[in-house]
Length: 234
Ligand code: CA
Image (cartoon, rainbow, N blue to C red; front, side, top):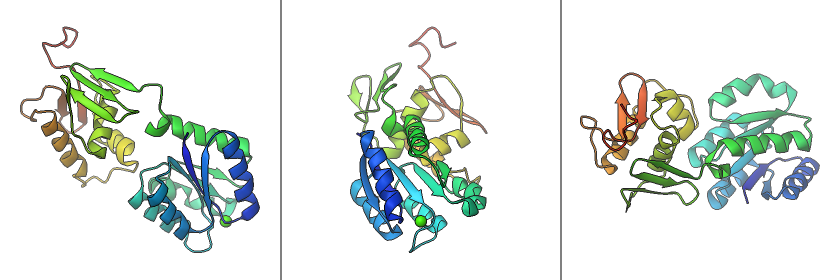
């Protein structure tokens, strides 16, 4: 069952949303301050955070930034109409979606389900991925190559499973950064290149002699079945 952290300081709204979410099977942790939210995120590792922008202790932008530095759980922002102007900035800062108050529980639940469908925690449809000798179980978060388990850290696993879910398709840097880090690409940021090269090493290959993971210069990467393993590749 997905774990939802609800951050809302209005007690009646907090109670109503907790009821609505619980009735749909979500496990809800509710809190009313940014400080409690930040503590809860580290402790409970929720699958999704619903964040009210008007909290008593910290402004919404700051809370979002602090959340983003501690969790990669998707964040759904609940905003009042007068705060709506800052929405674009918040989406750029890593929020996944927003709802404007007043909203119905149905509307909130629909947004929550849509976000969870898009993200790994809610994705149960495409659990098993296989490309050539690579196999990946997203539910169990394990991957193996030719039957040997791969020791991947969280980011490497995310990179690999995102690429493997789109075999033989070029995935741009922008798309990969958004999917794995959930933020906009900073043009000078080489973080992604570093993680891709670590992943590549764990796959036992190099940029000069790729088998699965190919660099498309200036664009991004693609993961394919090695040539020779599958006649349909070239
Ligand atoms: Ca509030």
